[in-house]
Amino acid sequence: MATTYREEPCRTALNRVKGMPFGWSLNPYMGCVHRCTFCYVRSFEQRAQRPSDDRYGTSIRVKLNIADVLRRELARRSWKGELVAIGAATDPYQPAEGRYRLTRACLTALGDARNPLSLITRGPMIVRDIDILAQAAQHADVSVNFSIPTLDPDVWRTTEPGTAPPRQRLKALRALRDAGIPAGVGIAPILPGLSDRPEQLAEVVRAARDAGATHVWAKLLYLQPGTREHFLEHLARDWPDELPLYEEWYRHGSYLPRSRTDPVTRTVSEMARQEGIGRSRPRPPGGSVPSSPVARVRGDSPAERSPAEQLPLVL
Ligand code: SF4
Image (cartoon, rainbow, N blue to C red; front, side):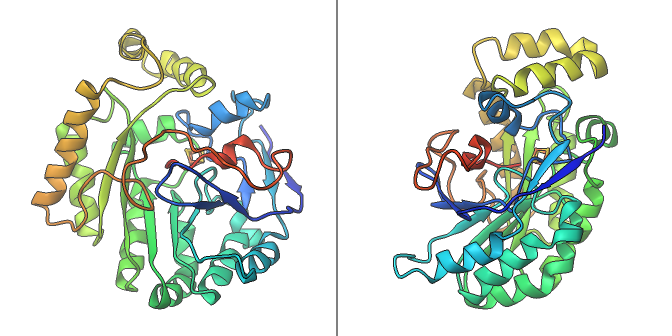
């Protein structure tokens, strides 16, 4: 399916986020051509009455003026220099960034303002912006998170049809660490029965250590309406034997019970500790585990902002 790019200016750059470890999010693009089968943004697209099926990721909004708007917002007297999380609702280093360079421009603006930032991506293109990130890290807290759910080639290829191989993300992580930029790995989402075996998790944790990760955190798959239908449809095609198990595991709702998630996150935490990785507790970018899976947002025009932009969680 061909991808269309809609060059649409924005009126606001920073989105207010409540109930999360960070107060503000920033997304230069809306929609994501990576089209991961588990992408949680699909559920928000469905709520906004936009396609959450295979058409998701085929129409990308490009906020051409976002860096200029961001600079104005950062210059306001009312701006208190709070942490800004980049990439909560779309990958800031999806292919369009090679042409538009909006993420780079936003990082430059945040760096010039000496504003703390966190960023999450699956895109090795981030190495292009090492100069900006290293400079920003000299004056403010900077944290980069590479989303690497698994190193299993079959699971990666099947569930992330548009992303770069996980080993490329690890190479990018190494490059950032060599430049002194704090960067780690989010093992998310872990897919029960497909990527949660201890040896699979250990492989990611060891690779993160070898790449110099400053932290590792983990989160299991959750399936909200919109994501659920799409993921299960693809599961039925790709791993039909798993379908009854998922239907059973997720029969009570979008989240697995803690009796199933806690042992996995504890295992990752212990593995990271044993590997000597600094910050080993499961935690998403910006701080502690969120108190709520969905942030409430207020501030700018809801008509302009996609519900997906209200998402504070990890890619
Ligand atoms: S999970 Fe992240 S990288 Fe994958 S499609 Fe969604 S926003 Fe893009």
